[in-house]
Image (cartoon, rainbow, N blue to C red; front, side, top):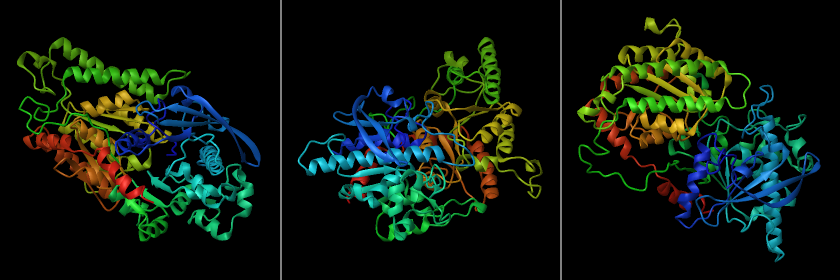
Length: 579
């Protein structure tokens, strides 16, 4: 596998793709499929993985010879499996995987480093194949894989090199499959006249490309640009989308004005793959405890006990959030306004919890079955809504939508969906709280921070912290995931694994995993206004059911759902890798 992220290496995770690269190889190993992962080292992952120097390889990039160092690290959970970490100064981005870059030149820095990464892996594999053909020992990646599995646009240039570079023609002996985790991120760059362009990266190859070859890799909307994502779709042997519903949605053109995200300009290429029987939708999975849930648990058991927040839970969550905030300040000279607002809100909530301890408040009921002597530990926060995700329009556009003066509900006018949601929660659940954990777009972060300063029942935590996210999945009452599109989604699976019900949009992998009034709450609409209004009305319906027998039966059913990797791995072997 070639990927930009890998959750099996400390510091190697940004999004859900890292979970796939971490967990899928474990499931495939049980099917006798051995997986090694190649990725950039980013200047720090080689140390995090305790990797050892393996080789130096030379490649011709941007018209000059560059030396790339390859490190090899043992997989922490699998015997005789390895990570190959490629190191070069271009890959180093100050301890981060992705570059923020310049808004005027989107993807520029990242596209350049991933182009060099793709070329380096291609050269290493090609040299190994040539060595094997000459009956010589493999130099770098050994054994040479039977199938190359590319993940997302970051690896698209590898597919281009495999198909068109005559010096790397030996790679065509290796079947190549491609997984699309997010079609909206395509890594588009100019063909020429920019330091981050196809001609700048690979001048010799670009001079030799035919008009037909150019037509396979240029963006259909911007013919003067190369699309690494499109190159991987067109030039790979099979294309995989990470949920069946998303695989159907991308065959239709996008209509952003009405809130529909489909093929994002690549629907024609995906339709061709479908006609060739080379387009596959396989749902992602998540990891579950080894022991199966008992379907006959007694009234005090795991399945039967209501999931409600104890005071101890609430204090633990607040402490975890504060620890995350402190860690985010390391190395910073100044505290951001987002972190200042979050810390102020945390202090307010912590004081309230401490006062509750001192006064022995007993409002609410226990998260687990609680004896009378423990009732003083129940929390006054009787409802906790949670959300974990990247700050992108994909994830939060609906929350940011502002109702116009034309809407019938007077108190909605001029307010965003998030504002109305917070006000409805304050009315329906006066002691309820909403904790949103996420990072990404700075403008969205500032907007949400300003909202948190205005609403006492809302805190926005601008960052990502693994321990805090686990705590939110574990202790939340309702998980909000209002994505405008969602290729698969892992957060809703992780919340359901803990028995937390989810409120989601009826799209992609959310549609495939959450069923309305059975394992969660689902809203839908034909445009952003309808989706925002439906989100609020569905939330109100959920609050009408909160802590009812119906709610608890839905929690139990949600926790019983299994989107396990072992079942999905079988589909990878039978449908994707059989090329």
